[in-house]
Length: 236
Image 1 (spheres, rainbow, N blue to C red):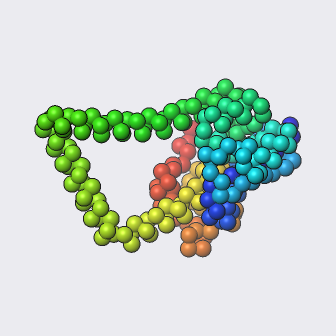
Image 2: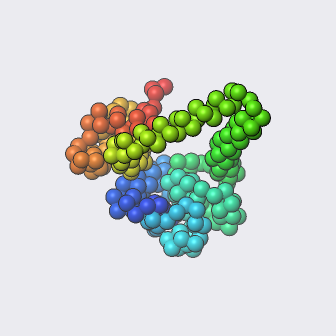
Image 3: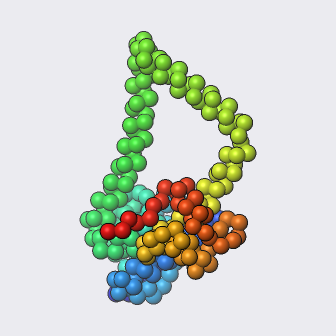
């Protein structure tokens, strides 16, 4: 089956680094080899938010105008909006490299559950804080103590933030650098890298340097994976 590939990164730094786009290409390439797809064209949008409808993006519109099925690395590269996904399903064919055999119903369910979980987390947090405030206004001692503790923690947090602003900046920079190689590491694990050394070798073979421009070591891989919350696959 002939397909066209569509890649998207939401920040220019991801596009300039090439890591985000390269990792997406690897996902699509791996799925194409497994599923017998032939990628006949590639389109990419750099610095484009996932909140914008795919058909309103410069390259997204071209990809879907091609007429052949569109393949994306992950569903969120297409969109994070269930309404966008549902609308596209009615008019176009597309595939997701990380779920190559999923049908439209399964993709729709996945998108709904992902959006629902994000909404639930936000609503649970807001509801818990509102309930605490109501109980405190009614004179609930425990609630008053909880609010006092929360405010105290916020004050300490702000104070700590001011004292450690430089360290926070460094941590934020490290988080950004780690995020840029997340897809690359996930892909190495997906393709069989079962140890830290194997992941390091995989990154080196793909020409991806560390933040300091050097080669990867098992320790460097471990630190980045811990920062990203990634784990190696456990042997079956």
